[in-house]
Image 1 (cartoon, helix red, strand yellow):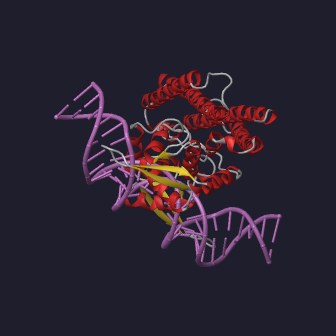
Image 2: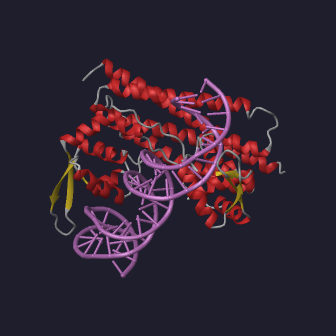
Image 3: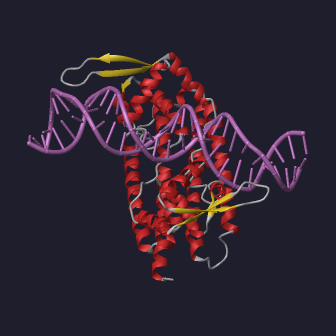
Length: 182
Length: 182
DNA sequence: TAGTACATGTAACAGGTTACATGATTGA
DNA sequence: TCAATCATGTAACCTGTTACATGTACTA
């Protein structure tokens, strides 16, 4: 159910089209929530039915018409009520740990290559986050809304840092195993 | 598709019933993969159709008959082929970050209470992992299979540690905000 | 005697992914 | 001229959750 609430959260600041929201899921909130454009359009249709959002048709020239959605008073209430309720604690769900669990089935080099690839991706993400930290969140004092958004970025930084630390441990372990074969 | 591969990974070491597997998802692999019993039974039926696993009916007295599944040669090949393929890099998906993103909508105390609750759960999990680390993985030298499983536990430890660090940051931020209201 | 563990399943629904479909504009 | 961006949608499918269904045995 949290996809609807994430969309409401994005609409609190400013109205947006399905296309705009979809882009948000690729950028701003993309590092803690993913959604495809199909999910967004389907969810918006449901939310409109329930009266949480209101569309406004904006005709355009040369490109398809836009449907700009705004949050309604009811939608705002739903979002605030949701914020007062306890939510699920996020847990790991990671394919590479399944591979590691039965890592003995393949040569250490195979897993090592895969872990190294993952490490690189985590490293790249971390660098992007650090750049956002240095550019978008460096003005002092930060406006209140930005402070909350900055806290979500901090989570991304903690997360990627932890992933990299684990990858390094795993790579060292696999290297050691390939040096002393069974 | 990785649920099937996780089940194959669990069956590599020893045959198991749907009920046994379900318990594994609550304990051993539970911290990096979740599945309900319905998912397990449905997946096993599909896997049997494809010839990845083989059931053996074990009649029991006083309780329902068991269906003990073993991995087949084909299933083993599927698992090993999967291990050679690159897989998705795990990313965060966390309700509490959606709440934090629009944290300004509610009083800081509301979010602070929720973050504190999450911190406690992460702390509890971390303690369990540390205990497992000290008991199940303390014998030196560790047998090869256990070494790989230990690496997955290490990921859990890194993850929970990072979560706690973020919660502490978030709590400090919210406390500061409630002291200096708008 | 009430709850938990054992053991398997069906059915319905919600959430997420992939493919297909359309069609103009802009930049390389 | 080819790909990408803008902009919305349908349909089918797979994955994950919740409720319902059955029935014994053991423990508190």
